[in-house]
Image (cartoon, rainbow, N blue to C red; front, side, top):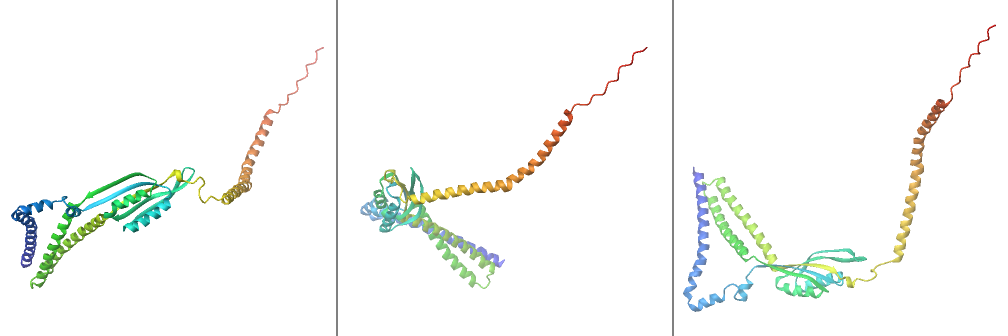
Length: 311
């Protein structure tokens, strides 16, 4: 009975603490709002001036995730990749992923691919303009901005409330441990609740860190396509001697294949044919013998002499 009363007391104290924290967080905005009209007309004008979107300070507090995409036609893909790397170093960004490959283009092959860039959000527009200058033409350019201010503020508030609850639980855990009549079940009950709160805090912090990364560094997806007008008539690296050697290798391979076929025919196919023809030859001989016997004419019986005339 005594341990049950302690557990009920601990849970009740935790619920009361959570309610007090929620009441304090709800009362703080109300107190600020009630204090604003008392400041007079001048303070009201200042409040209007500080409204979201009315000045640069309020706008900079917005949490924006920006992602852009560019499709560029370049004269030299490899040179463009090198210039993009230098550009990112100058803007404080970096190349996140790079996927370059050679594909058939006209009568030859050309290097093309995609690159993902991460650049500081304040340098996003400058990076897009600089990337467009590297291209012969810009096939497409898009920019998407997502406002996550509300979600970010909500997660931030949840973290603060949970951290306050964690402090209360830590104090409660110490108090339960110091009580002489506390049992291990009482201590573990508070400890399990404390562990759950700590897990929720870590989850929310991970989400917040992810948003911080996406907000501070914008993402640019770049597609690089070679310009057909700038492709050389003769592909670089063409070696006639190498082509001639490949032709010789192909000829030797063909002769080897033909020789292998003759060897297989003489040592494998021909013996099988001989073995298969022997029964056929015997069957043909027997058939001819039977037909010859059947076609031979039968001998005729001698006729009796006519009777002698009577006297």
